[in-house]
Image (tube, rainbow, N blue to C red; front, side, top):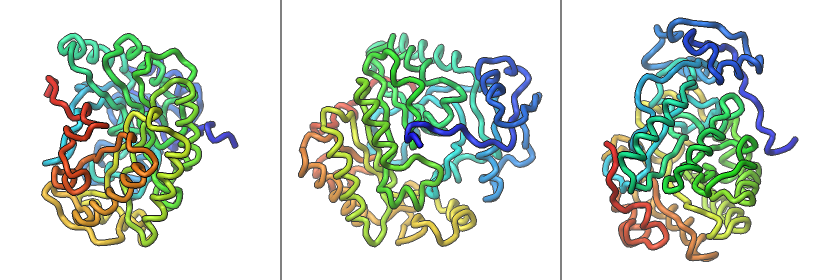
Length: 371
């Protein structure tokens, strides 16, 4: 099987709001015959909104709802309390992911019993137009993979091509497609301005197999990154969340080796590191959905100041230092930074604050921005 031939999603139910029945996205989804399309006048399963059971959450991945988004698409990355901010913004074009990672924060963050794709991307681009005019000197870095994977549904929406066209006309801004898929075929051969970063959330293949169900394999993600790079796209990697196991050092040594063998620092826009974290309320969902088969429940996790369970600072620092030192052994120019970590983590790992780390200081410069 071609590792870049990403499969269409498997759906049990498909709902389309009557107001968007003839939208481009709805017509395309209907033509794919993924499930019987049901026209509705309101959001289905409203009686199940709120705290979902593990079964409700699992079913939500195979129930798709197409409708307009009535709120703002563009907002500042919510980050985490006390963390160093890397000036990241998000453009949300849908909610829920059809992949099934054991540690996924959507299990506590999203309380919807179905997945949703917003059909009004033109409104999102109009919002970006307003932002770019209002803040002409702010080089926003905009990601589309916060509440939905950037590319796993791209065969349904073809949004990657639309975004590529918009950012081609706004070269001062940067767009990031963040994914655990290998689904780059809809845009990789299109003309671009070099300001669309194709980024891959990666983990050692052992973690991929055990924890990242329904995602592309690590070799497939790295192959997609190479194809994107060879077509002139900047690429990035997010080694996040790092997960502690008895052989974590070997696993992450192998991962660094695979990345550094195939990508030089000049190829890579940034590499972020983050450690496993989730709110205490998510523990019951992990137990119900994955039982004792997930390393996300292994090891000691402690309640941090931001209300999330994390490994203690000493272990996190050890894991970060290990990966960073392995990259530096290969080349000190790899642009590695910490994601969702407080200043004490930076001082323990880099011995300086992020604005003073030469390879990534530009990401942490203050800028005028919408709240």
